[in-house]
Length: 243
Image (tube, rainbow, N blue to C red; front, side, top):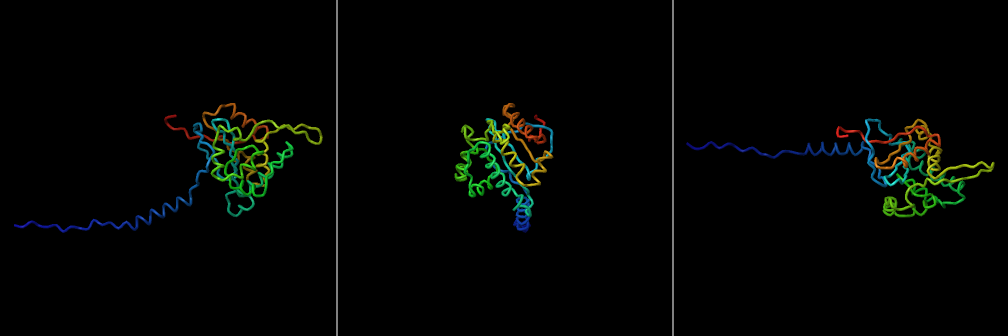
């Protein structure tokens, strides 16, 4: 008796529908995700149980590297309708213009900030160079800027905390520093939403490495309190079971 031959069925699977779904999912996540902004150095934050998220819009971020270098990032309003007035780029231009003006007033040194410098600064997420070097820094290419600001051994990297003493027309002495000049310029940038967020404490976020000396972090916090910016967030990583 002959063997019964079983008819073979095709193993071909139509993957068209699966491909369509995959592309749609990728498109959805790309359009709804918030990409992490580039930072000058890698910072491993201490862990805590807090689950409060730091906002990504209308916030001044202060980054303290393990070496004690201080950097500032500025994010304006995320509303597309307000981009020309209170958006990140518009806000950054106002901040640099005001900070440069106050620096010249307090030190008598003109940082030589040009219109081209303002436009270049508007594109920078996070910065940290002395004001007197800002013009030269902004005239570097993007690659050179990244190389320069990521060199933590360079004494010209980081916002200086050195005291600046200014005597006003009434003979009153004003003691400040470049960090305070920048933070006041951010507060008075004309972005009402950012100013309101800074008043409530949601608009100032301090991020430091868990290995950063406490004295350095304390100096930053002390400067904020000196400017009556007593409300701020300290960024941490969510504590795990291993912690």
